[in-house]
Amino acid sequence: MSFLSTRVDNGVGEIVLDRPKALNALDQSMIDDMTDVLRRWADDDTVETVLVTSSSERAFCAGGDIRAIRDNALAGDTAAITRYFGSEYELDQLIAEYPKPYVTMIAGAAMGGGLGISVHGEVRVVTDSTMMAMPETAIGFFPDIGATYFLPRLPAGVGMWMGLTGSRIHGADAVAVGMATHFVPADAFAGVADRIRTGAPLPEVFADIPEPPRSDVPLSTIAEYFDDTSVAGILGGLQGAVGDEWAQSMVTALGSASPTSLLVTAAMIEAGGRSTLAECFERELHAAERICATPDFAEGVRAVLVDKDRNPSFTPPTLDEVDPADVVRIVTGD
Image (cartoon, rainbow, N blue to C red; front, side, top):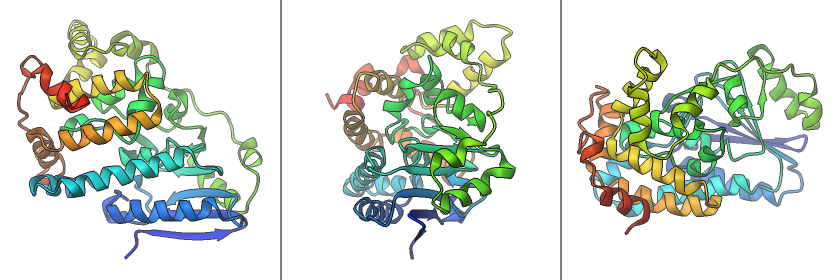
């Protein structure tokens, strides 16, 4: 059974993500099938534009199939883990370098792997229901799928804020921070997709779309607290903001994450800021292999996705107790 459907009409090749019960979470078959289709279409003269949509109103793609990865980690199947992440990042790199316009219509949730198959593309269309996030630190992991490349290239502090806290951005906010290219109101969203399907030139499709609503993302506040590479420094600044409700909500978010993952994430984003996308994928692959073998990954996925008690017991439980050598080993292998 395939969780993708495809069609080609009017010069437009459309890929429909169709695993609604799992919110289109990318399993190995979806990654393999999407890679095969995109490779074929890259050399197919009948396909001039690629359009990626979802069959689900709830989600574009909620991420990778993390539960399956946890099962492989618990079984000690490192080959399956390497194959999954290696093929996922290969797909993301293919999208980033795709020779034809690659358009994603992103309604509902787009997290983790869902951003990997959208943010690297040329045209990313969001709407009122769109919610983007990289929530990996809550499951003992780190933002991957090339996020260590694109997060440090967002406005000051935004990438570190999203990567460390798992904070969500919605609709027009995604355009404001550079995660999306176009905002289309909900009542016009389906119509835009239909116009793209007719083969209309993309500039014409978006010519009459109104300016997006004003963003509510507090960019200056985020820059004040998160434009730093030290997790301890960021946390200390937030804790010192007594009476600042937003700052204290960020303290709570950081407190629910794996301390090891927070430090790994900060180091990966810092390194990604001076790396190519290919270098980021290479670093992420080896870091993913190593972090999946840690107790925090199995425990984080258990708490969030398996038992869903949202009460993980991370080891070690505090930033101060994390051995810096463990962070270096995960990030660099040394």
